[in-house]
Amino acid sequence: MPDVILYSFTIAICFFAGILAIGYLPLNKRGNFWFGTFLFSLAFALLSRVIALKGFEREYPQIIPIAELSRFIIAPSFYFGVWCYTRNTAVSQKTKVLHFLPALLFLSTISVPYFLQIGDITDAFSPQTNNIIGFVMRIAVPMQLVIYWVLSLTLLLRHRNTLRLLSTRQGDLSWLSGILLSQLLIISIWITCKLINNDTIDFTVPYLCLFLVLFMVCHLLKQKEVFLKIEERYEPGYDNYVVRPRLTDDQLEEYKCSLDQLLEKQEIFTDPDMSLSLLSKKIGVTVNDLSYLINVRYHVNFYTLINTYRIQKVKLLLSDDRYKHLTILGIAYEAGFTSKSTFNAAFKKHSGFTPSDYLKCINTEKMSTCTLPDDLTQI
Image 1 (spheres, rainbow, N blue to C red):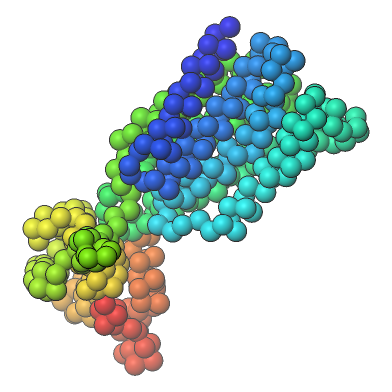
Image 2: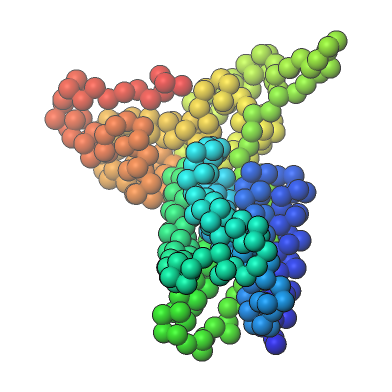
């Protein structure tokens, strides 16, 4: 009985939060759409569990094909939610179809035939076919959950490495790590119970599901916009709208001069805690205006701009005999980096050489054969 109450409470929250995420949360709309879809799918899957616990399969048979279909939607919808929160690129239609192909197959071969016949789901197929379908379902659903959990974790780790590489706290999505950890625990318990055919530890799942949903909803509600967009302002014209740039040319030039001063004279990029919001305060503009300025005048984003100056600083220090007493890592710290791994990755990305290879070129006086690019000329 406590399981039914907990599941029912979780289902209600999932439905309400799903509607909220898809239709009413104004920020991160693409990501929230997929997380809302995830919550709806989870609600139907838990509803199937409640029906099974109460023995209502015969009384509410129409719920079964919907609930089973939702099992193939839960994992990819969560994955696309993480995608939209960690990558500022839209998901192509081809990719969506590919990832939801199992759900489409289940819909066309199981759900639709069932509803057309208005009978028990097993009536649509022979016993042998039902056995095969049951076996595939038992294997496919756990495999899909594990695969998409790994894919979601990979996206989140890449995002975290990017933030660490760029030495900024903006866009931190550590709360997603908590959700993935809860999912891992639930998936592990569920698969373990299936493998050993013992539900001894299954009583923890309702509590974990409720915690996961409440934790997720709480952070969705307070999550700020992950990706800052270059905005355009519109003025009414005679027949339609006329696009007016966010900043005028004079403003762009003025703010660029201030930014150049901070970068080239004060070398603010050497501050390991430098972020877009902190830099905007130094210049006296909004975060969105600064993002627009960097995109329009430098043709890169904030992170690339800061790292370009840091790498150029490292190159200058490596060539300066006054800094020979410092290690390569020590020079990286001087330029604003905070760890060896992030520095090496940034240096390789921006120059095409590892820091040690670059230093060898300097020491052996073979710089002419290295053809190292000047990153600043690319801005």
